[in-house]
Image (cartoon, rainbow, N blue to C red; front, side):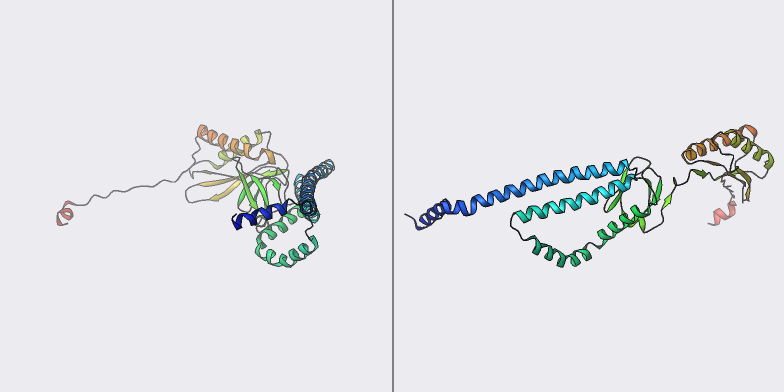
Length: 289
């Protein structure tokens, strides 16, 4: 018989000896199955516990973003505990692993400094709460509605219904403009009329349109005043106050109504024009050329 075949047969026979099965195969199979059970059961418990905590925080009427952010942190921490428990049951020395992870933590932190910065920025956003879910903001170069603050980034929805993921550090690094923070907003409009038009008549037309709109607030009173004597127009500033949710509808309606009223009353709204002057070249110059 071939020596190689004899060697393989002897090794296979050794594997099926009762001592090997009792000492290695059965114990390790039980450990692996138990570790897998710990993982799946632990993950299920972590998800259920996280959901329960979120429900409690929601019933306490805490901010939606705070509930989501805290839920993500708690779920991640519970999963880490489950992983450590599963590895410990397999016989892997988790204490030494934690020591190794701790020693490597500095290098990982330096490599992932941007991610850690985003995490710290997320904590700051939750603590100081410059905005909440449903507000319309401008932050990190993006304008939209924040839907959720996650561990490393914030999910925002733009007015045209696009979902944009913005790093938390990018948001806290610049100014945050919250258009929904206050219950009222001021609409800033400028209407230009020609120098030959009657300023009093134009102001009266605008005032009649503004005061007729029930959505315009009377306190503070709307401002209608001459703003500038520009190069080609007389500019009238219009500053009505409205509720925040009425800002864009009222602005659009006022623009349309004033334009139609000016057309009906013969008020001219100047627009850029260019005069083209043609000079005829004498025939003598043409022939010389």
